[in-house]
Image 1: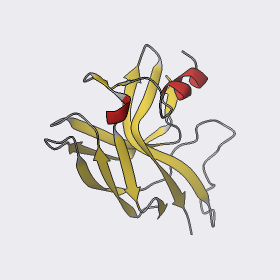
Image 2 (image 1 turned 135 degrees about the horizontal axis):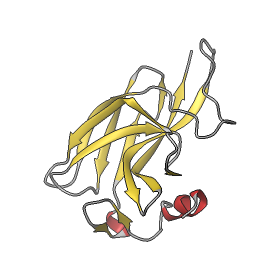
Image 3 (image 1 turned 45 degrees about the vertical axis):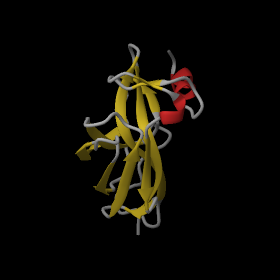
Length: 147
């Protein structure tokens, strides 16, 4: 499956998501909300998740896309957090925002010391799908800004 197919498969309204812990119907799809969703680099936001399997351990990371083909490395693992969902499949956690790696060579990170940058990133649970695709389950879109 190519990157375009992976992105389409991860789109809202697509078929049920396979998260490694079973199929999830579209109406119960995992979702993460970031508040605030526009955050200065090295500051924290609160992530609230719902629709996940109950009592499951999840690792949440910041990435530059919601689906990609391996071996691309488009997630920042330095600020990863681990949570355990509640009996209702929910969680709340504080998350320190960094800058997600570039998704491609044309989307480079802001230069060191850059002033006034703004970069779109996503926060979610990276989950293998098929042989060579990873999707970011529950992905919340955030905007990372710099001074």
